[in-house]
Image (cartoon, rainbow, N blue to C red; front, side, top):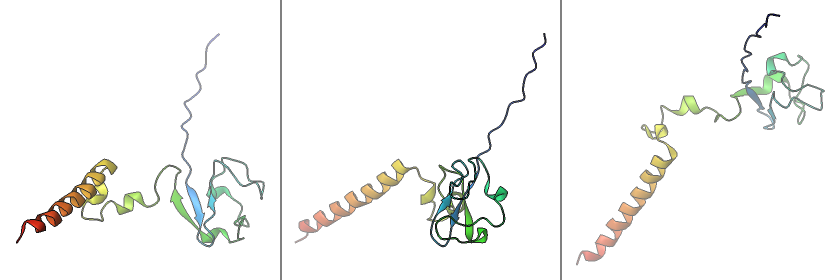
Length: 114
């Protein structure tokens, strides 16, 4: 008896889409109960007459916000903010609270002037 190995199935992360009218987010992992859309169906596979279950907006009113767990527009925003957007949250906290501490020390040093 020869064992046939099944090819490895790569799970593709499907993008979520947000309704620009009401803010409803279509998540392919959940599907849509109102229109009997099963979980796992991508936004492109939805019927042309599918509408937003909250406000009945057409498919054209939706915008791609990327996969779940990823901040919307994160890659696009890395170039802004004088390089601050590339810092980790810990580095940002050090920068913010360090600047506040330095400003407080400068404020206290004004009492030394007479």
